[in-house]
Amino acid sequence: MARIYPDGWEALANGAAPSLVRLLDTLRRLGEALPDDWVVFHGVHWQHGAEGQALFGAVDLALVAPSGACVLIEQRTGFLRESAEGLLRGSAAQAVNVAHHLGRAVAVLREKLARVSADASVTGLLFLPDYRVRQPQTAGLDPALIIDADQRDALVVRVLGLDAGQAPDPARRAAVSAFLADELSLTPDVGAAADASRALYTRLSGGLTEWARRLEMSPHQLRVVGTAGSGKTQLALAVYRDALAAGRRPLYVCFNRPLADHVAALVPPGGEVTSFHQLCLSMLRTTGLQPDLRQPDAFARLEAAFGVMAVPAEWVFDEIIIDEGQDFSPAWRDSVLRLGRPGARCWWLEDPMQNLYAKPAVDMPGWVTLRSATNFRSPRAIVDMLNRLTPAALRQEPGSPIRGDAVSLISYTDRDGLIEQTRRALTQAIGLGFERSQIALLSFHGRERSALVGLDRLGPIPLRHFTGRYDLLGMPEFSDGDVLCETVYRFKGQSAPCVILSEVDFAVLDDAALRKFFVGATRATMKLFVLASDPAAALLNEAGFAEDA
Image 1 (cartoon, rainbow, N blue to C red):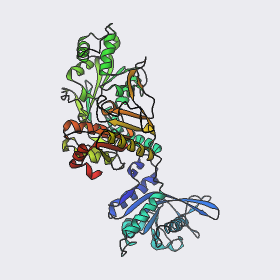
Image 2 (image 1 turned 30 degrees about the vertical axis):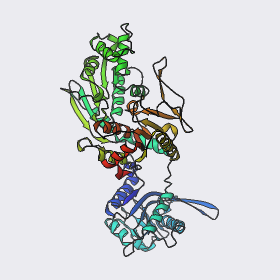
Image 3 (image 1 turned 60 degrees about the vertical axis):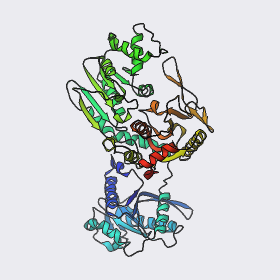
């Protein structure tokens, strides 16, 4: 199977014009049929200065053969007109000579390629899958280089024939491929790429959001067991908005306060978004109680008091959404569900792999269960790496068309090495084009053990971290800084284009360590750096990480 550049082309067909869909079908066909030593580029744009003017153009497909020869394919679907001037596309007033267009591209790229390979071969093929050329001799192109509707099934054979008998030349092939990659402008606008990645994830993972909301049951009690990146948060947001639009009052409850704050900023007013312990505090305070959280057993007492208190009328809801269900106990579940009025619609969202607190699984008798093991958010490179470390029963299915960069594994020996290597990773991430607001620096440890969380800056870069205080509206306060620095525990449920997972340190890659590593790694939507102690890095490599390093 040939290598296709750039990645993510499969998703381009969603909502695309018919001509682009047809071109992507040809791209898929070539990719599957050509051998591994062929390279296929799509969407090659070129620019050329001639006689004081700037000329611009594009080529549908550019193929690099094992010999280093380049084959350009111009595909034209639909009806064409044959005239004395050649094959024409479009109306008489705006007719385009397709053979001239291809010939100009061949001439320009041949001249440009001469800079990297003096004897580089460039051949242009005109592919007309819908049209039979009646007069090939007047088409303006060598008839041997035209593949019309009568010959469309021979496309791959004709392409292979252009390189038949030529000796492989890996050096020239690499030089021509590098040149075409440069013509594609593959140095990315990472900000735009991050936006596109987020939009793509939203679209692909929308299946869970769509179909979970179409299920009918009575009573409505749906348990969704979904892996990281499967779209659980999107589902929760859609359900919350649906309830408001239908005149129902929703309650969203999760375990992590940062996730609750994140969701609260995304939904319209009219319901309640809270963490479980926030909910306990808020309801108990309506009775005049002021729990003292400084006591050693304060949270256990808080949970017990909440579980037996009478439910005020203002705390009754029509729709209840429990997120991060893997972190809830049966008592917590029952305490929250009793806030639903008779006939309330109930949703339970969980991911067993994100159980960082070793909570036993909660039984949900009578609930309908929907499972999704597809991760649409993480690039395939991250999913593949995690699947090599994870038992078969817990592996994810890669759902993103984006391959992504290989995960960067960097080891350190001591605290000074940790700080320095993390600083270098942060500098490298910025050098790759990520804006500072698109980077999340995550500690594998909690706040008490972390050498990073709480730092005001890393080198010249100021860090933004939670101060431990809340403002008068109950919102968390953060220090001034450009790059968010958080723990894996607090960042669970959220994501960032670039994640630097640092302070990864364990003596045994056991279930607890693997789950924490899984949570941190699946926060990244584009690029992941892993900074691990020497022993932890060795254990990761032994388990299969090294194949991707």
